[in-house]
Length: 379
Image 1 (cartoon, one colour):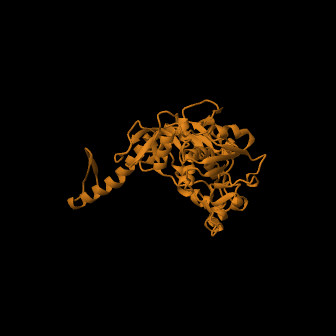
Image 2 (image 1 turned 90 degrees about the horizontal axis):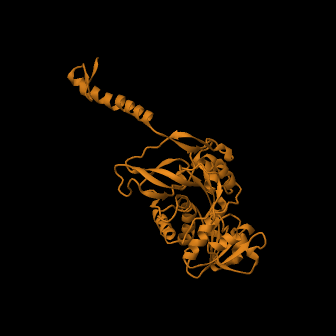
Image 3 (image 1 turned 45 degrees about the vertical axis):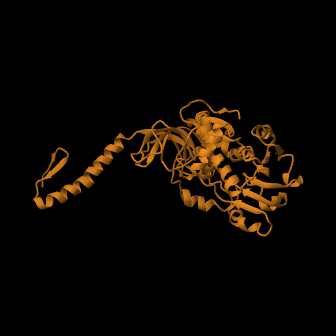
């Protein structure tokens, strides 16, 4: 059999009844392989922070990595800023609440990570759109919350146009926009959807200076609540500055012994379980467990049954409409992400180290386009 190329067609020196079938097979398989190899060789690379085993911050390294290519319903995003969140810390180190260890391994890899690039939130610019994309255009400046999809600790990523993506408010930086999603959507889901917070209610936020806690302070104030923030001595003024009506220094006072009751207690650090705070809840109070062990999460619907009080736990949901809501608040100056420090991508292991301490103030941001050393950021 002789194969000849005639333009883009193959001609086979075989009987006519076999030629069509052979041409189809060759086009489908051989040309497919060749095209794939061509695309592979022409594929751009990018810098990404990758890890191939669970462990301390040192397992994360910045390397060259293949740049992703968007599918027909996806957008390619050039990432300008992202964050190292508590979710990244927990996944990387397997430092998870009691009972969740096996579940995290099942989700992200039993023996080693299945997804080598961490990162749950980003801000950037859309540089390519798939042919079926209608909601976004090249040049759109956006922020997004891929959540458990991960992949944000890189210069580029792809997302479906239906993913949680929203246009970035023009009055905030990429760094501020990148830090809106994780804390903002978690706080919004727990306060609005789970806790059904009402104007005039008294709410206590345990861990008010963290990413979720600082967002919760501002969002609760937006909904008209009276907010008490619990934090350490060094963060008292920061929590006041973002809107808390009262602050409690947990190193000096145990809020469960001050005689006050609250309509909502939101625990963002895992130190305020039902057994500890039940007497600090009003008759119809709600305990919102943002961080809790597996046992407390599963028993949440049962422990307060018949008492008029309720315990609500579980993972926060990622919704496009929540990102748009946060964007409107940020545009109006009613919500500003609290940022502790900014690092360049090359120092992302240092960012992980700071997050591992458990004492960061707000978010730790990674700048993709900067070589500037880690710097503190006001408010």
